[in-house]
Image (cartoon, rainbow, N blue to C red; front, side, top):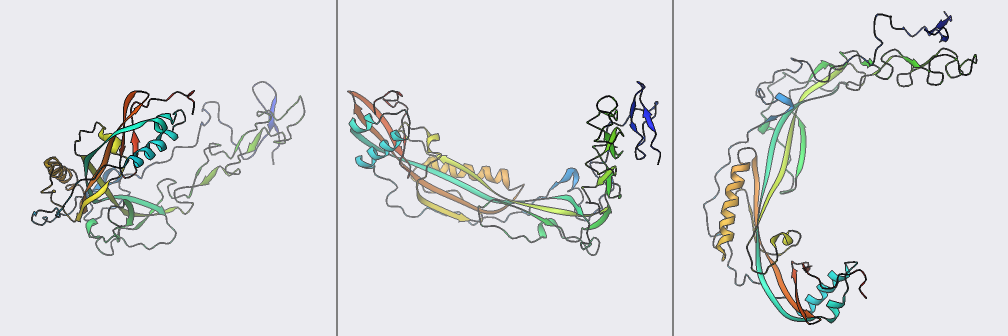
Length: 386
């Protein structure tokens, strides 16, 4: 083995020649990295599958759903309701909710709750209509995985159409994603990343298998004429990433050189939801109702619904009809409708008037949770005496 010292441009040695390393010529620049490798399969890599033409471009394709059947004839779909109203909460419940609210604020004094006098409890009926449409959307894309002997079934028989593939539908209104391998589309191809070699040049050492010694910076010596003990005076050390081989196992095929290529059917079940809150004159803004629940007064779930008819407040019936049209326009052309559900909730709101220190104030108690809102709490100073 040739162990001659090698001199650099300054007349000093850079260590002992490493027979496993080839120095760049003077006319060619040193490699700054490993050769570029393909990041995407080349043209013609994927086969043409009858029935899937034009649905796989760009990594995935939209698949129009089968035409929906017509809904049942419209009927007066509201049950007989003797009372759509909810009475006001009691003064005790209003005070208890207010105390819980004030106690949850670090800088709120509870004095207005303890010493304030409730002067009026005024109930308001607020209805929330909610329409939910549970849909199924299907798309396809090419996929691949390292080939380790899996069954290869391409061209054995025609691949089933995307919407003909049976999938287990989850519980209604539970969002879920499922990926299925399309039968009779699996074939074996040489790995496009490593060109079927099973390995790629190491990026850390640019494929050379070694790098400049970080201790002596390639000189082979540390202090004067003391030979570098880290690289034994060679000036270079084996690459730790590839262990001196200059290449590493291909991550795409995991060294197996081949890929199993197939079509993946992606199925997404999604619930689309829209709400409408009937206007009420309490003074409480509708957005405050987003995080509370109400009493369910009516619910219906069918494959396809008709708008609510016969509700005492016509604005709710109009909103139901509008939202039905919007859901049809948005989702019927891109998804298969699995189920629809609409609900009417009555959200109780009580406006509480009270007096404290000769001044009048109000707060709201609303929802099944007896949530409290007030925009002008009279004792918010951090220095208040509790």
